[in-house]
Structure formats: structure tokens, C-alpha cells
Image 1: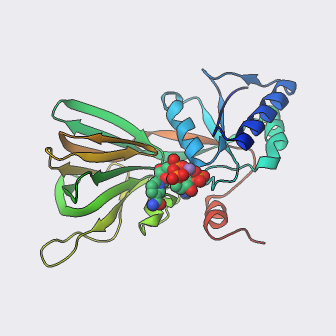
Image 2: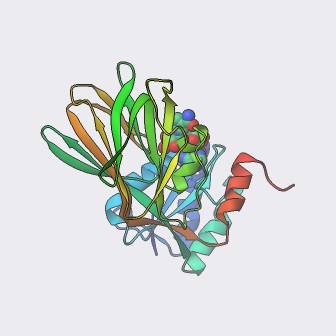
Length: 264
Ligand code: NAP
Ligand code: MN
């Protein structure tokens, strides 16, 4: 079993990383950053997002496991005092992999197109003022959006930015994407649906902005400014991400612990 490790860089996360390397060596686990079977993230969800993007070209052969060190760690199953149990589990058994859907994003510009993969979401905002863009669902015009922005999330990302926007929390066994609005302008003149929309696999949506406007585009934690964008297409990706589970941690327990508090 080969593992790679990414930590947030703070003192506690680094210390736990050292502890994990030490224990792993005694249990016969091989540290391999290039071709790991398991990618361990120590920190928060931000760290796991970084780990995902580092290994997104190897999704067929890696699975991710998270240890949280104080941050929310929605994606993290293990606590800071459980490194020893985690390493023992990694050495003793093949994990049960839980498979989550991802979002495929294609950004078309005047000069070509590029594709991206998101674990949490795709975010679109205007840079100078209101974002104006038409939204199409399955190639049919749906609405003309005016407002601060649009967030299109995966089921596991539905508890992130999407949730702050009043979007629904979606179980990751549903292969879907969710479109949520950021402060849409709604009055006699301008109208959007107002509620978030959930699309199944094999449906897609296109966002068509004014190509002369500068846009803020984010894929998970990675943000860029772009101009000359003619359209953006989002769909459920054919690729999936695997999380290594050495003990059960059902999604709804995760949601309860992160947002409501633990049972006791
Ligand atoms: P960050 O500013 O630290 O993230 C904001 C918070 O979102 C952190 O508490 C983070 O947990 C948590 N988070 C990330 N993914 C989550 C998920 N799938 N479910 C529940 N909570 C989640 O930035 P970051 O750590 O680089 O994470 C980037 C993410 O932040 C984006 O993908 C987006 O989902 C989220 N975000 C939220 C808002 C908002 O709610 N207004 C605005 C921008 C971005 P940790 O503390 O464990 O890192
Ligand atoms: Mn964070």
C-alpha cells in the first residue's frame, strides 16, 4: 500500500504528518507522492480540495482520506488524536471506497476552450458590477440572470458555498448538479426562478455571459479572472472521486456533526 500525504502547513497539521510518516514506516506502508493508492489530507476541507486537485489525473487509482485539525473538515473522517488508528487501519485492511460524483465544466472563450473538474463547485461572478448572463438548460433558454453570481455545485459540495446560498443538501449517491443564485435581482423587469435547481445526470446547463465583460471564475478554492468568455457548460462528470472508508461515517451523520453538533 502506497500513500501520499498533504498537510495544511500549520504546526499541528505538520506534527500529525510527521507522526503519520513515523507510524506508517513501522507498519510497512510506502510513502510515494507520485503514484499513491491512498492520499491522506491533514487539515481542513481546503486541504482536501488541494489534495483532490493535485491528484485529479489519477482518480481511477487513488482514494482520499482526511484528518481534520480544528477546521470544519466536512470531508475528513479522522480526528487529530486518531492517527494511530488510521495508520493501523490503512495497514490492516483494504478500505471500502465511497464514490462521489463530480462536476465537469467547459469554459469557451474567443480563443478556445478548457475543461475543469470540481469536487465542490463552480462559481461565476461579475468583476465590475452585476453579472448578466443567460442560462440555458438542455440547450433551451431558461432565464436571464442578473445579480451577483451563480454557483453550480456537486452533491458533496452542496454543504459548502451552496448551503450558504440556501441551496439544498444533496446526498452524494445522487448523480446530480445544483444551480444556486447569489443575490439575483428580481422585480417587474428582471426575473429569475429564485430557487435553486437540481439537474440529473445527462442534463446540462449553459451560461452565456457578455464576452466583453471581465468575469470571476472559481473552481473549488481556485479563482481566476477571465474575459472573452462566450459560454460555460456544466454537467455531471463521467469521472468520480473515491473516499477510503475504514469505518462507516454516513453522510447524514457528517451533516449533523458539521452543522448541528454531535449527538451528545
Ligand atoms: P474557506 O474560506 O476556508 O472555506 C469556507 C468554509 O467552507 C470552511 O469552513 C471550509 O471548511 C468549508 N467547506 C469547504 N468545503 C465544504 C463542503 N464540501 N462542505 C461543507 N463545508 C465545506 O476556503 P477553502 O477551505 O479553500 O474551501 C473552499 C470552499 O469554500 C469552496 O469550495 C466553497 O464551497 C466554500 N466557500 C463558501 C463560501 C460561503 O459559504 N459564503 C464562500 C466562498 C467559498 P474547512 O474549515 O475545513 O476548510
Ligand atoms: Mn478552509
